[in-house]
Amino acid sequence: MASPDEYVFQPHERPMLPGSPATPTHPPRRRAAYLGIGVLLGMTGGLNTALLTAALPQIQGALALTPSEGGWLTAIYSMTSVCMSALMIRFRQHFGLQRFMRVYLLAYVALTIVQLFVHDFTAELIVRGVGGLVGSALTTLALFYIMQALPPAKRLGAMILGFGLAQLALPLARLLAPLLLYEGEIENLFRLEAGLTLICLAAVALLRLPPSERINAIEPLDFVSILLLAPGVALLCAVLVQGRITWWDTPWLGWALAAAIPLIGAALLIEHNRARPMLNTRWMRSRNMIRFVVIATVVRVLLSEQSYGSVGLLTAVGMTSDQLITLNLVIFLASLAGLLAGVLTVRPTDLLLPLIASAVLIAIGAFMDSHASNLTRPANLYVSQALIAFAALYSMAPMIMAGVLRALSKGFSHIISFSALFAISQTVGGLAGVALLGSFQIVRARHHAAELAQGLSPVDPLVTGRLQALGGAYGRVLGDPALRQAEGGVLLAQQVTREANILAYNDVFLLIAVLAALTALWLGARWVRLRLSGINPFAEDLAALQRMRQRQ
Image 1 (cartoon, rainbow, N blue to C red):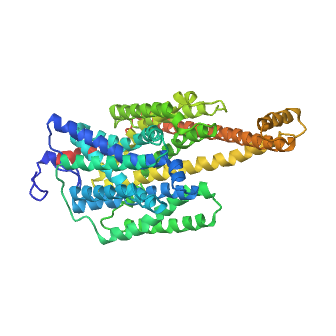
Image 2 (image 1 turned 60 degrees about the horizontal axis):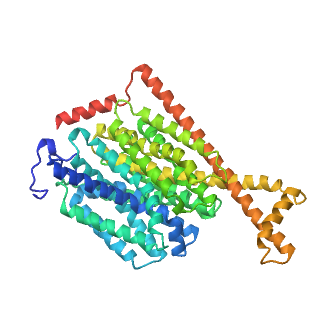
Image 3 (image 1 turned 180 degrees about the vertical axis):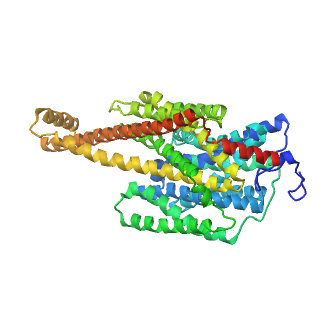
């Protein structure tokens, strides 16, 4: 294959924008190979963070980490993933796609191999930080490979598949983690990560992407903006992750948030006044894009019901990860169905209806879960969690298509701004959702524990009988009745705490159901208004995109 400098692109196969590959016509077997490699890259990029999320308690235990240190592993991945997404597009445009791929993949292969032999907090922190960069890069590469496999009319679906595969990785990781940790060896997780990365490196070496065009994209002010934006967003991610763990009245959280706001503001101010901005703030602050960010963030917060709520509830009733394999299989299959349904049914003429349907499904699923008790088991959540899992991936298609149409209609340079907006809304929205629900659950658990404790009078015959029954379990090892009574009190307190937590999770589910219902009503009212007036909010964007294609 000719080098990028020697290759002469035909008009119909020119890259969509510098840094992306050309799109020539491929024979069927090569298209199938591109599709397979794209799926591999997308799942590998998603599993980098999904395996950490699914196996974080085991990793904390194996490395003797405190909850706060475990939170930093989650936070640093989000920090690097969000902060560097925009700058990586500039790197790809400036240095070329092939060099970009080799640097990131080789660096991550080296780190994952080192991770097999060095097990400590510092090494894990570095690997997860670089993993955030590589995860974003692999998602982008997955998108490019899938685009090679699809005909021109369907290539917008490649973007949906590329982003969707990363989301599909979390239920797959929850399905795989108990099997990998069957004997308690976290090294199996590290071996899987290293193995998948090596396979990806071999795959992209065997079948390269077509060449891309390069431009002088990097400017000195890019680094100034990133040096301000990156620590600002990183501090914001740290606050959202650590706030629920160390609690919100910890002084350094306030200082971190106070520093994050001016740092982010200064970066946006620089971008706002640049001739060739990396982030087009004027477009980003338009009414349509603000609405897009709000919807994407709200949906991401609602989806925290599954990533935090259901897992926490089942843990509270004593379920372990190996008892959730069937439930995670149901969630994975429902997520896959949602992704495929979104890709096959999304239409630019009606992007609100799938979002309304997703919000309704989340509301139904969360309301079903809000009736949990200490007898709730994974089988009781199959239907509700399947509905939410389907909605999670089904809503991805209209959001991505809406953002891409808005960006492309204004020019290819706006793709960087869209990528940054989407990454921030999904990452920060996910962290904010867990922080909101986690804090709400803790507050409600304390409230319910206090109420339950008030009803336990030591002179109540039922309470006395329960204490005697619980203390009787120690009858063979404790001869002193007073000690047995004390141990019975400890067991009763544990049962009260468990019941308080279950009631608190029910409150969380009910809160999500109400928020999802309100979201559905808001979007539904807008959909009815647009229908009655005969307005397609994306008509101008589609017309601009069509004119752009004709000029090319």
